[in-house]
Length: 114
Image (tube, rainbow, N blue to C red; front, top):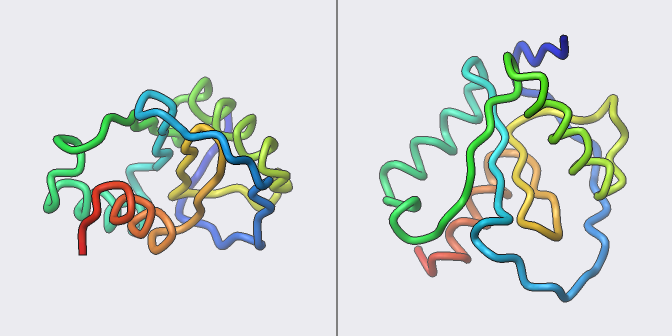
């Protein structure tokens, strides 16, 4: 069982330059219930009604090994070392976004929010 007890810091990631446009069904937000940074992102999502504006999935990875495996696979596509993977983490179908600020900025850009 993979355990994510709290948020982790990340090393810089390589978001392979790819001009593909992600669709809403490709966007996945990975989190754990114990991560305070994940809670900040969830609060932003709820306060700004992001789910009403774009479609995305949320996957809890602390207790769900299938979701954790999926997170590891997506992180590998961005060439993130397995030892550096943590949450909050977002996959947009092409690129990885790591940490609360990157993820919130992604949602702001996607919804044209200020």
